[in-house]
Length: 528
Image (cartoon, one colour):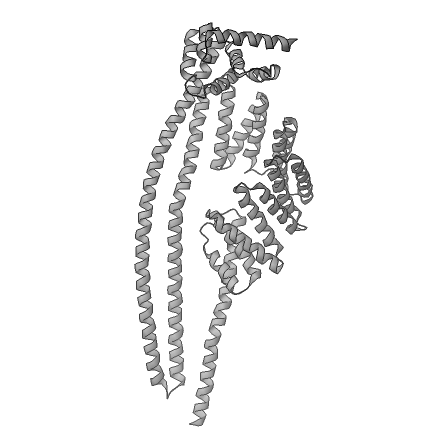
């Protein structure tokens, strides 16, 4: 009997050790699973895939922080921020990046800290704080150390921010550093971006020859996906220079490049905006109007995608909760299986006390099952309530979308009327340029233009379209002209009577004579 008791006691202790080892094994498998989640999100992010529904990264981040595994917590926090940013939850993304920077510096993970500083700079830049963004980009460049390509990208971002705040001398310094690093690292993508930023800076200081030279260096370096944008930038410069031959050539090259890749809606909108300016430059108002409608359609599609994102976020939240509930049910089934195996083993080993232990365990199991069933019922009721609330939110969003569509239609009609009015004004100016005494054309011009407080601004804009450079010449040649004298000078292009001058200028005929005499005096003195 004593031998039997010893054997039972040894087996019981062995079983107890096996049961105690189960949580440790489970912890190890969970750690590996969480690392796999981080690796999967990292791979998708580097491949430019959509990661907005990778919600398990948040669980991995919380797990590593609770385990005080800061080496894995740093990248988990970093890619949690990337997922938050993909969801457009920018405040949460900023907090994740700051945590990634903190944990990365704690364990010496300069890669995670550098990425975090760069992404913080992007968020700060998007909020309009360029000076603070420069600080973050510089910090990222220092953290990259010997990684020339990454450091070049950060310094290129610093230069871009200096261009935005009109610090061109500093911008050229950082562009020179970024170009040297990119060329040393043979990073053609970053080098192309640096040349493009050079061109932007040169255009802003009116050095278009240097801007064209930089863009010509940038185009051969870009990949097929970015080639349409590079060619578009070249075409814009030639449009500004009014070089039609080069403009037509690069415009054709741009269209050919767009046929080989799928351009983003933002790129399409930029192309249509350029085509509108090009059509207006050659006086093709019909094409300009067609491009304006296409540009408007792309803009409306972008607005529609943004309005649908809130509905998708609600659906994603529901899917994540369903996955969590499924995981909980699997864990509950596993726990039940472990408990049943424990009961069977104990019943086989402990012969004498099996009835008492079995009774006590059955009562405890029944209590747990009842509690779990009650909890499941509560969760089901809560899920039904959440589904009802989400349906109500979805219906409200549908109403908002309908209202938004009506507003967009009204906006389109208004934009069309304004565009046609501008075309009519320019047509009247062209008629008056050919026949300055045409009373019908001048009456149409008065009816279309002189209506509202800002009609002189519209008059000058339309006048500049027909007589480019004249207004700038008058301001430069006669800088001391008053507003009334300057307006009389513009109206002198048309054969108007003294009374018509007075009507348009809003003064008496006597004042018109005074303005004319003063203008003649100033012009004679300037000529002398």
